[in-house]
Image (cartoon, rainbow, N blue to C red; front, side):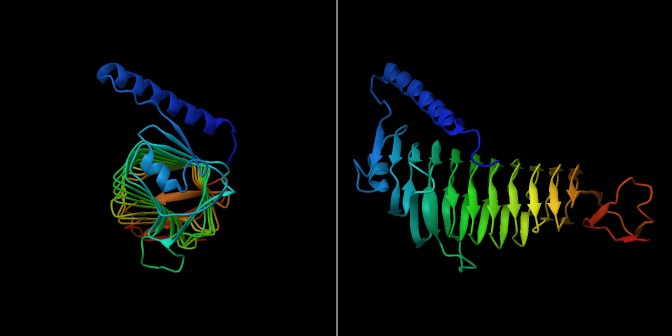
Length: 315
């Protein structure tokens, strides 16, 4: 699942580069100002990544050779940031508020190990390896996130893609707040003790085909996290908690050791999910319901309870 389809990253980057070239050619014809993308190499041409970003123009590609870079990087331009090797190109934020802060749309981050955003022991903070604020059309692809307060924090942003990253050994995984149309797909999240993926006040997002292992909650929807799709994920030990969130589509997920809990959440479509390989019953706003037995079903069913349900099993 992770790091397969080896040419996919190259294809995405080349597609973005081609689009930027076409755009810039159009601008040249329109206003007569040449603005062709440039490849900038760190550390061959620049002492730091931030220096390269500061010198860059929209559409430029910054290529970072393997090594350790201790920076708190602010990206406020539409650039493509590429590490030579995700295992050997390390960005260390030194436990600051962030390691990378994105404040502009049209950014690609790929090929890095990102660490030192906040501290794992900081319970109340918002430090993160990667913070995305008020931005759109950002791609975060094939990176490692470890040793951060949060791996990825997305605030008031839209059309973000978090794809094929390995997120392990952080306090928290991916946190979305007040964001829309974020795609979180084909990531592995493990050894993040608080949660894997957390959505609050965020709508129209798609969380699918991730593997989430451990944490108090594998996936957590809270406070009007509505109209999202949660599908085809494998969630081990953490389960799913949905509070004050409605009209979500929860489809074809596989839970191990722990299932789902709903509270004050309505009109959620729940279908095709299993706990330890067995189907699940979803009951909404039922009270004093008695399930006489599971004998009418060809396989054993596991139940969970939504808000307003008081259900009893009679063997």
